[in-house]
Length: 358
Ligand code: NAD
Ligand code: GLY
Image (cartoon, rainbow, N blue to C red; front, top):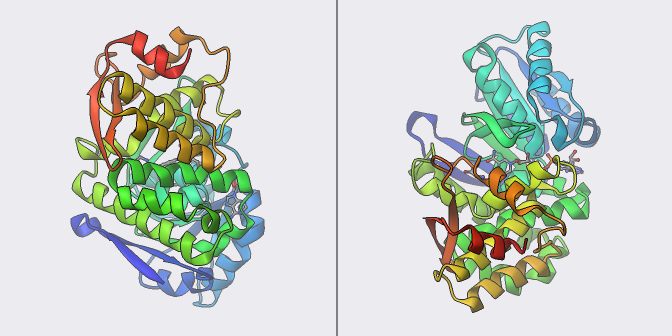
């Protein structure tokens, strides 16, 4: 098992990554004197891994209550957070209690939001079970829920006490979900680390075959990069915004399609390719690098084009809701070369539409 540290002073924590480590979860949790524990999950994940977590807790003499909510991005919304508050109150969780988020990014985000607001904040532990959650959403403390008018519009910054990522859980993950997670992995190569991007190009076969060593390596390197960025800028007043590469377009596409047509990673994949094209159109990056980005995204079976029939005005107005936008002026994370990005305002909506292909 490897540990990667997120250094945030007295809120620092470890991301523990390993194969077949769910059985050791209870022993780790024993380090913390939580009064009560509630596991929040969905039926899909709980059926697969609920017993492993419960048995591991029982093994150290702890019991957890379980709250299961429906599976799907469309349930990552305030009314379901409200339901979770009610269940926590019924189960008498107090301020010394902890929530264990067992699942992908949807469970991690909503359970994290609830943990940060229930009784003004109780402890949170992340047990991510999708590739996307293991490389991105469980780390760094962004929590939240969607609003019909915008993705992740309500939320908090709230760090977990630790993250427990068992890479073996990815063996039951549907292929489409694994590939969607690869979008965020590719993102780290583009924004930070050219050598990592080359690894993703050269070892595509092994990664797609779920070779244990290759998969563990991509999770570890992704977490190292995210931990470094978050440690420098926890609340996104500067460098952390680079983690949003592909997300200005991606989030707008998710909102526009009601959170049901595209997986988050798929929308980000399209967004990364559009934003690479926009970088070329604004004279920041050469065409060869942009082609390299889009080819790699495609090579991992991810979409690179906006769907047909998208209304240019509608997507532009949704992008103006992006959290990086200031007074409606659009900002994008644009690569200048592989491994380095800049945050740039783009005022020319013609160029944006051209990059979008709408
Ligand atoms: P998800 O949580 O919906 O999980 C995908 C699907 O896989 C679900 O049906 C889930 O039940 C199932 N599943 C989970 N683990 C499984 C397993 N091991 N085996 C079989 N099935 C399994 O989707 P996701 O891609 O993990 O997360 C997407 C969400 O994460 C979005 O809401 C996005 O906004 C958010 N996100 C947050 C951050 C952040 O920093 N907080 C970063 C990136 C993405
Ligand atoms: N996923 C973007 C961030 O954590 O900042």
